[in-house]
Image 1: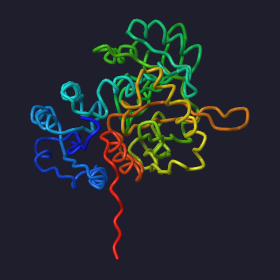
Image 2 (image 1 turned 90 degrees about the vertical axis):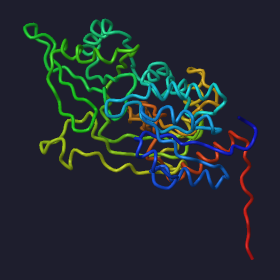
Image 3 (image 1 turned 90 degrees about the horizontal axis):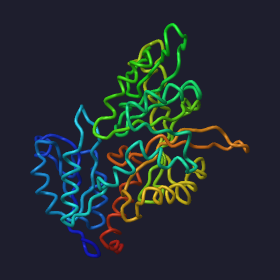
Length: 359
């Protein structure tokens, strides 16, 4: 449906049957989005999804005009392949879906780092499409270029993201590595290179791949999350992260090992003016061209995570893309719900309500 009034929008997130039965627009973390949509005259309803409620959610989604999705690719060992198939089906029946799974497969996977490596956010990024290629080429890359970061194609929460560095390379012992996974609570492990390659074998299942990037030494300075509403910046979040940094002597569960708070900033924050200009005028249009994604298919909300790269000749920060998130962007800046609602209204041709005055 397009060009007319959208009477109903469903918001999908993962839960269980009990959560689905009890869900209201007010009793969940996305309540501000429900409120912002209502203020635009858009009816929004919860559509809590899990594998057991797939059929019920499917029937519900066929009765709405559009769907907004907040479901991680991996959660407690479960994926969202069943949901993606459902979303594709309802989309073919005329329901607008954001983010459509086909767009997620282009933007919301680590392979995007390789496909867009020629943009100014890129680095020396490599792709291994098979275990054999990984075994043959990755040790050479480590020896030539030093510490690397290996990433499985689709995941979240640091799962399948590894900092890898050489500990020793003596002829008698072979190549020995120190590896540290990005998920919270991880500690460094010493492994022969062959064992690490075996550990990574599972990431090639179902057509998967591995992405290989150089480790960024400025990682301890923090990560900048750039929040996007379609093709315009909504805001920024800066956080001191601890992923891929060895835990302190107090251990991985100590307060010192926990990430800092994410400090939100408005889209016009001076500290990120250069990054905003790059995202809106250069990098996002470049990504859209490389991935063949039109503006009308960009997610209503997505984010790009950046690490600080080496400073340029003038002393300015550069930025290296380490991930794009389109599946479950949360938390987000306080201005994001209003922008999401505005973009949904734009999609369905809904005009802003006229301001009312009282005497």
